[in-house]
Length: 315
Image 1 (cartoon, rainbow, N blue to C red):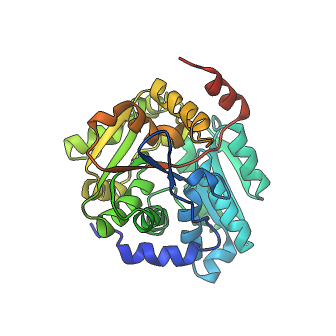
Image 2: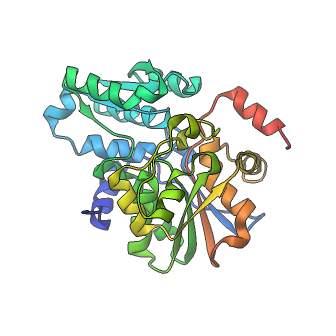
C-alpha cells in the first residue's frame, strides 16, 4: 500500500499554518516528560489539522458544494471549524451518545448536526453525502487527514530532536499514522508507541496478529475515552504496522488518574481520550524504552460535569 510521505506532511504544514496552532512542547518540572498539548487548538483537539488540510486540498467546486463528516465530537468540531473558515456548508453526523459539549460546540460553529445511533454514523454520513453531493471528510481514512495529523510529529521532531520515545493515542489511527510517519522520517532512532484503552484494544490485538481485528461497537463503547472508540481502516492499519514500535494498553482507572495529574501538575485540561497517552507514561514508565519521552495530549473537550467528577474521584 502507498503510504503517506514526509513530503505530504510538509505540504500539510504549509496549508494548516494560521488555521491550526503550532502547539508548544512543554517540559515538565515534576517528571522527565514533554507534553504536546493539542488541547490548545482552536477546537480543543488535534483534529483541526487533518480536517483543515483535507478541505484545503479540495478544488473550488468541491468546497462550494459543501462537506460532510461523521464523528463522536472532535472531528465534528474540526470539520465545522474548517468549513466556517472557508465559508462553506458542513453537515456532521454524530452518535446520539456523543458528549453534549462536543455536539453543541459543533452546532455553534455553524454546522448542521444530525444525530443517529452510534452504529449508524458512517452509513448515515455516506447516504447524506451522496444525496446532497457533499464531499466526505473522514475522521482518519484519508491521506490528507493523515498528513495533517502528521504535522504534530513534524513539530515534535523540530522542537525536541533528541526525543527517544513518542506516546500517541490510538483509535482510528490517523494521528498515530501521521505522527509515526513524521517521527520515523526525521528521528529514525526514536520509538513511537501507540496507547489504547484496555476496553477498546482492537488495534493492539490486530498488530499482534498481523491483521486488522474487529471488535463490536458495544465493547469499544465501554471506555470513557469516547474519542478512542473507532477502529483502524486498511489505510491506517498499514501505516501503524510500518511506524509503531509497540502498543501499550491502559485501564480506565489509569486514564482517570492521568486526567487528574495533567490538571493538577501540568495545569492542562485533558479529556479521557487526550490523557490516554500520558496514562501510559504515568502507569507503565518502566516498560517504556529509554530516552526523553513525549506524550501527545490529543484533546481537552468534555462536559463540565464529567470533568468535575473525574477531578473529584481520587480512586
